[in-house]
Image 1 (cartoon, rainbow, N blue to C red):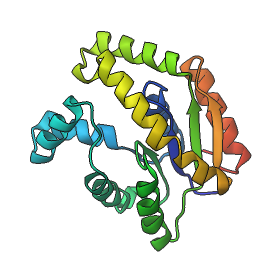
Image 2: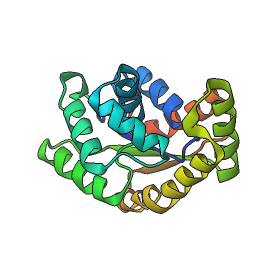
Image 3: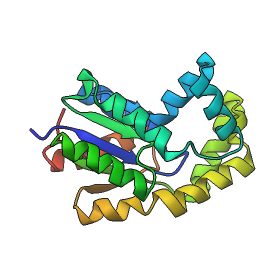
Length: 195
């Protein structure tokens, strides 16, 4: 069986956080979500949390150095030895190089990249709905548009690197949670990655 060292990629509002948790539970691996790590620090009022809150409130992304250090530390923990699912990192080509160096040094490269394909309009509708339901100040229309533009210009290009390696599975991210999850499971099984 191929070790599930996974990355889930998609625009904000694609459902990657929700699907990432489901995948991690199904495969018995940790979901390493930079967003969750950052939000936990904000909630706990840590020094990192205060830095992150100011950055996120401005609609910007946390700097690469800070994000990379947090992810490397998390992947070095024992529960990630048999596999992991990354969500939110790498999000640009510089972070891909940083992650490659770390994983290559451990002889444990990514085994699959799940691309959740969702039209921009669908992402905006989902994020606006989430903002209303959860009262998230970082999900106002201007911040949503800014983050989607950053995704399109900085994160989407990482898929080209992983496509060259032949490890990207593009999955239609529109449908019920169960439908999308089933598409992901089928794509991973085709690679020999099964729960």
